[in-house]
Amino acid sequence: MDLGAPASYLTLGEGVPVYSSDEQELGRVEHVLADQALDIFEGLVLDRSRLHGGHRFVDAEQIAEIYERGVLLLLTAAEAAELPVPTSNPAAISADAPADDEGGELSRKLHRAWERISGKG
Figure (spheres, rainbow, N blue to C red):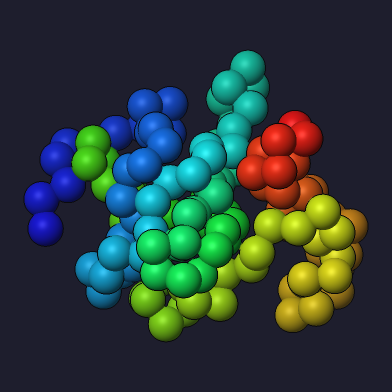
């Protein structure tokens, strides 16, 4: 798999393929979640609609590398199947999240992801 040269989240665009660590195409980038003014990359919203999976949130910590022609995750395809769905009420989908994250960083990121894909953010 030739994904080209390493790249930055700043160059990552919609439609770029996303691959699991076992080289399975999982979907395409729908949105990049970042605060460019502070140079903070939070993750991305993955569009799995081609694979009948809908949107999923991928935290920046789950991304191994960003390349010119693709994103490689640290997760296998089986692990990626468990990625959370962005929703307007992230606490409702984070039942498996650590208790200390309730209302925390992951919830905030999931809420921002929902706002982006729903057009509210």
